[in-house]
Amino acid sequence: MTPILIFGAAVRPDGSPSPALHRRVAAAARFGSTRPDAHYIPTGAKGRHGEAESSVMAALLHSFGVAPGAIEEEPTGTDTLSSVRACARLLRARGHAGPVWAATSRFHLPRCVLLLRIAGLAARPVPIGWSDAESPLRRWYWRLREVPAIPYDALLMAWHRARGEG
Image (tube, rainbow, N blue to C red; front, side, top):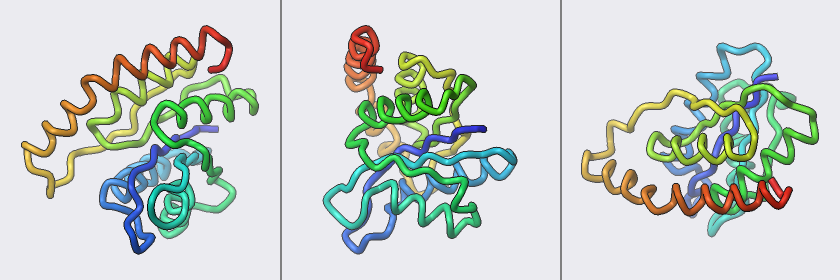
């Protein structure tokens, strides 16, 4: 099994995926199409609009031709840290000891991979580029937003792991 964890993003008021969510799922689907044992785990709870992010992503994966049996929703994660913790529990419960792949926006990959590794999973990033629609200024906004989030979430993940709450 090759687990591909897809981290959530906003769902639009009409219930459709935001451009960021669409890009994350498309990257995961492209990457998984080269692996016959791909197992997609979209994660994300219900936000302000529409269904849970995980459900919207699962529907999008179906539209990309992914078989329903290759998708396992994780609908409880309300942020990056809780999504990592939930996915780590899910994979440990299945006895998965191999690598996992993280699919998310490019600016978000370092944090996701780091947290997964602190959780004890051999994490690797799914390749994804920047959107052509994003300006360089917007890209820097997202990168800078991660600066305080990375050490904060890393410390919290390490604390949870030390308490056996991985």
